[in-house]
Image 1 (cartoon, one colour):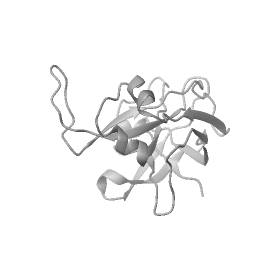
Image 2: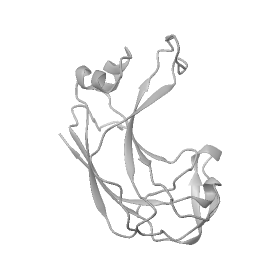
Image 3: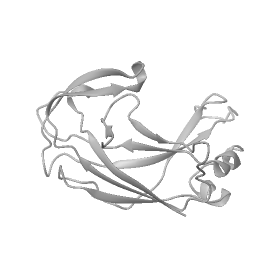
Amino acid sequence: MYPYLPKDSIASSLKLYPKENANLKDLKVLKITFAASKGTGDLGFLEQSVGDQEININVLPFNTGTDVANIGVAIPIESTGELIPGKLVTPKGFDDYYRLATFTPPIKEAGKFYTVTFFIPSNASDLKVMGITSVTLKKWLESPKFEILNLSSRKTTGITVRNRDRYIPVIIDKVEMGY
């Protein structure tokens, strides 16, 4: 069964957190194989932001060549809550999210699987290059966590700007991790 990630869901991410016997420390590469869903019409999704209740969405057909399917990976780093002049600061204990770079172009075709490769920062220097200076970065390096995000964008003209009319669900086929 493939997990679906609807776009514009308030909490549309697939979380990859280490479990009891799993350890993502020293992970170097994350490869994700995904496709834009060909599903159309009334589809149901579980929405995390409303207690995993099912929400029904009328998914419009993917417009090949116009709409764009893409995914991303973000890493959560716990905020220290330290004030930075001129910047909004996430309260202490909550996470700031930083996206990992990928060089794969967005996908403009539905139903075909593509693999995207993300390189994982493996030391404090790598994280600092990303702009992460939090003192909690060591905590993340010891126990990395990831979120797979649906970054798809419906570019079709003539549809509303209402988020549920703009869904482009993606299907995750597999997630490969390399050390």
